[in-house]
Image (cartoon, rainbow, N blue to C red):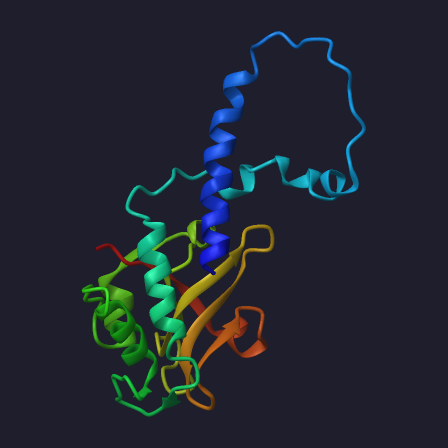
Length: 192
């Protein structure tokens, strides 16, 4: 996860420098034939998918997100227990509040509180570290489950998230999993 974020940040810096050379005259240098590895990665030249038409969030700190994800992943496999706030067992909101609490950020104690307390954003603005919310069998149409976004596919608008699952404890799931796809409610951004 750290490597992906570092690569994305590096690609953004490189892409911001490239337009500076756009207006310069091109010399008639000999054109060399691209090697196989260059052809394979040619599609990476367009970095527009990183921006998705939204402004870059200055509050989004790659280092802080890496620390958050490291903390979350350090609990993979911890068992689920209703009402538990960690570190040996969690319920869903106990897990998210514990992970953010390690970063000295209070996000609320229950999934409903976390949904109400944090900033609503569009699905297209979703980033690693955001909170995603779902209904649960006992919540009707209301909020009943919460997780932390791990990765987002900007093309398909699907995401993976880490959460405390009632059956398997802390694990990573996909938004395309039937159970979660049917129960997805929305996403919230946590502000420090």
